[in-house]
Structure formats: C-alpha cells, structure tokens
Length: 386
Image (cartoon, rainbow, N blue to C red; front, side, top):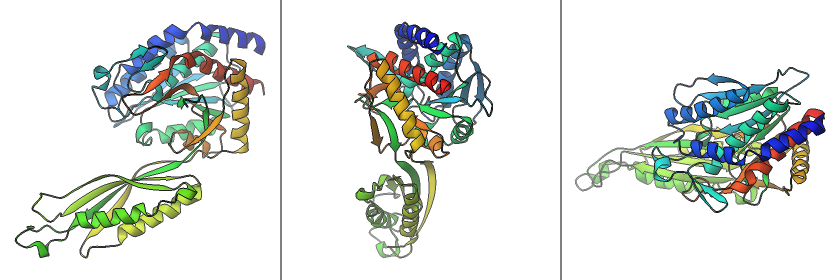
C-alpha cells in the first residue's frame, strides 16, 4: 500500500508547481510583519481557505496582540498513533507597505519578494504536502502548525508550539533550506534583553557637574557586556540598539540598549545572563541606576540520537527524488528549538531552498519547491510505516 501511496503523492505533487507558485505569490504580496496582526491574520485566512478546501480540519487560536495561531489536522491521533508535526511561521521582519514596494517577481529560476524564502515558501510546501495526504490518505496523523510571531521569538506562539510538539512523534520545521541544499540539525539559543539606565539631567554648560550621564554609563556597560563574548564556546553578546538623552546641551538623564545573546550549550545560558545582570547592577558612573528585562527567547536546537536518525531518514528519502542533503549548524534561532527541548526528534530548514533572508535581496530557488515537498512526503510515509 505504501508503494501505491508513494507513487500517487509524488505524481500529484509533481503536477502542482504552477499552483504552488501562484499561492506563494499571493502570500508574499500580503504584508505580514510580526506586529501587523491584521496582515498576519490575512495570510492565515488565505492558508486556511486552501487547507479546508483540500479536506483538512482547521482551528484558530486567538491572540490579542499578535496574529492568531492556526492548526490544520488530518487523522485522529492517540497515544499509540502520535502525529507528525509540520511547522512554519507566517510573520516576516518587513514593515507595512514592503509587499507593495517590491512585490513577488520571478527572474530566471529564482523568485524574489519579502518573506519569499523565510518562510512563505515553506508554508506553501507544508500545505501542499498536507493536501496530498488528504487526497490519497495519510499513513499517520498529521498536524500543520502556522504560527504568527517567530521573528520576535514567538511570544504568543511558544505555548502552542510546545503543546503540539509534546504530542508529536517527529517535527519538521519548514524554515528555508540552506543555499547549499542542506537542512539544519543544530541551532544556537538566543536571549533578547533590554537594559534601561537612569542618570540625572543638568545643563551641559551652566551646571554640568550636577548631572549624571546615563549615556556615559551606557557606554561603559556596553564595553563590559561585549567582553562577555566567547567565540571558542560559541557565545556572542551584542548590543544592537542604543538610544538615550534629552538634548545635545543636557547631561543625559536616561539611556536604553537592547542586547542579543547567543549560545550553543544550554548550560551556558544561565551563566551568561547572570554575568550580564552583574554588569547591569554595577554603577560605573556614580549616581546611575539600571534595570534589565528579557524581551524574548529562543531555545537551542541540540542534536540527539533520535534527531540524527530523523535526519538520516529524511536524507535517504531526499536522495530518492534526486536531492543530496547534508546537515548544517547555524547561529540563527528558530521555533524548532522549542520542540527539540521537549526531546522530540526535530529537523529544521526542510523548506524550499533560498538565501539572503531579512534583506531586499532575499530569494527562493523555485526548482526546489517540488523535490523538497516530495522528500518531506516520503519521510512522512517512511515514519508512518516504521
């Protein structure tokens, strides 16, 4: 039966290229920045319409501030028949109006547009794989999860991701495949923090000595925080945004900075954060005070024996459709870390291949749409029979 199912699914997917491209165009031409709830929900509605037409059951998980979560299901899972989870996020990093400024376009074998690779192509691929199994029968229950705020560390989606991952036998996250064609088996964790500093204002010419400069304190803290970077251990600490002051002729009464921490080993997270807190609590300029808060966080994707078996299974399936798949580690963060932290076999960057994400030059290799979908479908069939 699985041989017949394989043939049916592969043949059907092979005939969907133009329809997939058309759907991708629709998604890319809809703004969906992380804070654009209306836009993210519009993309969700477009996906839901396709999925329900294809025969999947869909459920929305409302969110007040961010886009709503969307889950599509096929089959009836239970403890003896756990589902496979296909994940992807609908939000992008681009501001409202970006899709109108540079809409979806094709040049040669590449497609361009905001979020075309990261990760609207992955959403399309997952949707068509789900539709294929809805048409021909799924060997195992399937769940498609379409989240709304990954680019800002999934503040509203993490709970939903963890809820679905706990039930799953395996997770495939359709972040873009690497330009090399590889998938990702390891990622750094990340913590995004905000530091606020208070000083005291004074006229910079009349009574300078009565002021306490929050900007001077900020500069000294930045130097100390950057010194916590340890490249040999894969730990980076970067102050990426700074602001402060009242006017050029006022000793700065306040300052603010946002800090990005990346790490590989889970145990390094607590140590580095504690070291940052120690810097923040130290006053280099007498009279200043400072506070620190976590804005968002990703967990690392740490390879395990189970995830290695999943990679080997996927790579073998990909080889059957003409793809040679390797594995890569990346310093970028993704929702896959939340699933992997629950000891669920997880593979990331299974989406169609692309490059230069988060930039005007972001591209998708259109010729990878079909074979990556077929590789995923074969992996699902293989998992269902194992």
